Length: 139
Image (cartoon, rainbow, N blue to C red; front, side):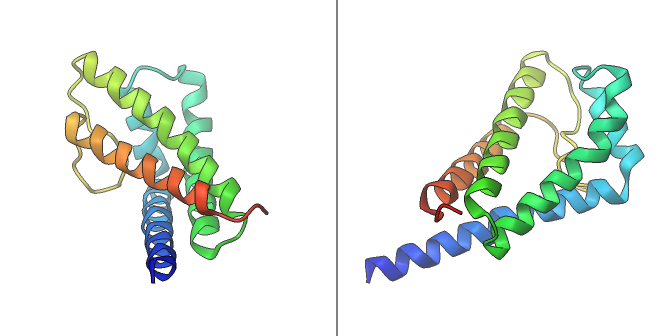
């Protein structure tokens, strides 16, 4: 019985994390200039690289999310998502400690001001992605 429960939990977390990354990435792909402005508001990326980051990051999110949901190279895709989340968490903490009152830009059309709740949410997603990585079959 426990094995079936573990399998369902694994699938649930895969669909949830993968779906969030697809949703987040597609919103950024649909509004690349808005996303570029958000990236610039963090004051962490050199101006000449903002366009490149805004153009590539959403596609990485979507492709990794699709891989996790479809079970294609799940271990690699969950590692990509975990790595992205680790970077996002560091950026969120740094931005929060700098006292900046900005939207995280994670999901288009969703107001998520940077603060402890957003950091905790990303930490939970990070641990979910690590769980997927730990349970995924090597590909």
